[in-house]
Image 1 (tube, rainbow, N blue to C red):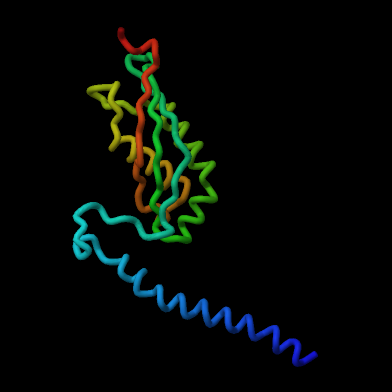
Image 2 (tube, rainbow, N blue to C red; image 1 turned 90 degrees about the vertical axis):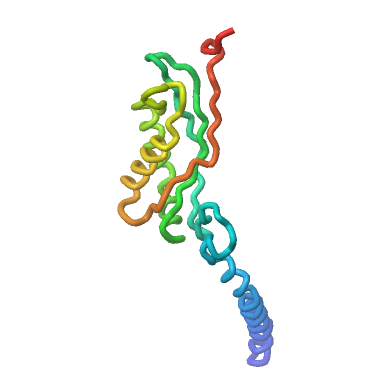
Length: 160
């Protein structure tokens, strides 16, 4: 009986040793990704740390001009969490955040003040970020980014 339990432990120890060896070999690769944008030669915005991005479901926002529905904006966004653990908390509250987004875009226009037919992207980001921070509390949400926005006018709103 004693010999049998020792034989069962050997494969487990071998597997742990292999996992440790692979983890140590992969360590330098992950460390290289943490360089600041100016050191890696990339002049664009620094990508969020792995595990901190939370993609939201598509948001359909009405585009209203002079009190009439002109079309819809289909918005794909992601929330950048302050940490991987904050990202998990955000994922758990996606339904509440999405509900706040839907209520927000239906409460007030997403168009620019001087051109209601054009989406105010910066204003929309600020509003959605405020909604997210209100739901999640202080310190958990770093930023919100719009990944893609597609405008779809109503057929009756298109002039022939």
